[in-house]
Image (cartoon, rainbow, N blue to C red; front, side, top):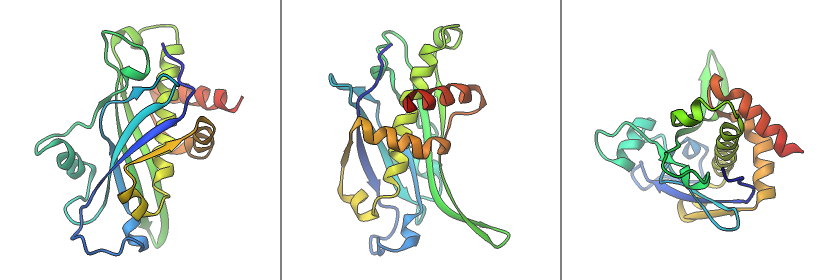
Length: 204
């Protein structure tokens, strides 16, 4: 399995869910959701190519389900993308479904910001049942790095997200994003220990 140590080239597809007349500089316009959009690939220098569709939670996009239908078509419910091309896996498919949320919430008079990307990993039985944990570790490491990049991009000016189709980040930059956002990328209890190992290895 490939060891991905390069940077990330992150494609941005901004879906305009409002009327088109909104002030993109207002705080309200920062209410973002996102789903991965397109299969990931790996360049010869180790750079991972990944992309995400972003939208504001306004107008006709209020949920990830709305966004999936905007991107994938009416009636679609899945947002899986293949990451096999980054892992050197032939003949089998490793997929993930990541759903980003960056939205201010309030509860009981207390306001707070939810900034997370719960990520479902789908692996074949040959990896699921393999006692060698290195395959699972590399899958989580890859998804963690790209997830951290996606979360970093939510902090960019909204107008920049709308007008910049691709952002390039060096390996060192991505490591810094992982250090900052690793707690915001969740793979569920089954994968939690691999995420902690991946994070610790990046700090070495």
